[in-house]
Length: 313
Image (cartoon, rainbow, N blue to C red; front, top):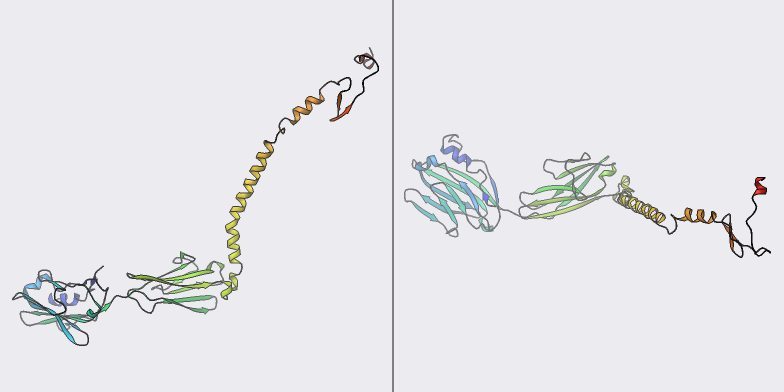
């Protein structure tokens, strides 16, 4: 990603096209940050419609002293860069595009662009160029007020920092129990509600890196309404496992009952035994499900009982 002038030339363009009063030739101060090793892009420094009226374009930088970066004279035409900017300044007179290649820490400072017309009018714009820095380690400050807790997160150093909050790994934006400031540095929590208990993380990032800081809101941190929340969450986590194991146990028990040896033939076996005729001799007689030996009768043969006496015939 290249660094751009961010509209610092806009007022100059308007002045040259007659859309701004000539009594206010210098626009407001602009800040521009550029990553070391990248390209500092000033964009188009003038409108193509007024190119024919220009005599020269000059870029200067002020640090401890003022140094001319380059000058371009249209009547020549000739490009006059100054060391250490030789081969680093790229200027296109047809489009007005101006770039400084391979940005270094020594390229920071206040840059002044000067446009001189053929009539001798000078118009200028300036910007302050800084180094684009990665974020430093952020810190979280706590402020308790009644039932509310406000957290403020800030990194001391860094350019174009973006802030983000999450709780236990999930973003808090849009939650009914949390409110974020417009820059997302401040997070206000509605305490007294168990859902707010957890570990909060503030994330700070830009193009060069990501840093984070954490804040714990638990019973051990002075929030008694959070007591019991961890054990309850653990119970909710293992409850489905308990239900599954219980269902599996019931299924195994039913399967074992239906596949037990003899379980399905038990009624047929005992019905068959009970329907057998009494065996004569030293045999086993089944009576009401019990077995006992029977002695042989004195007669050599046993005759079947005479049922006529019982029937009266």
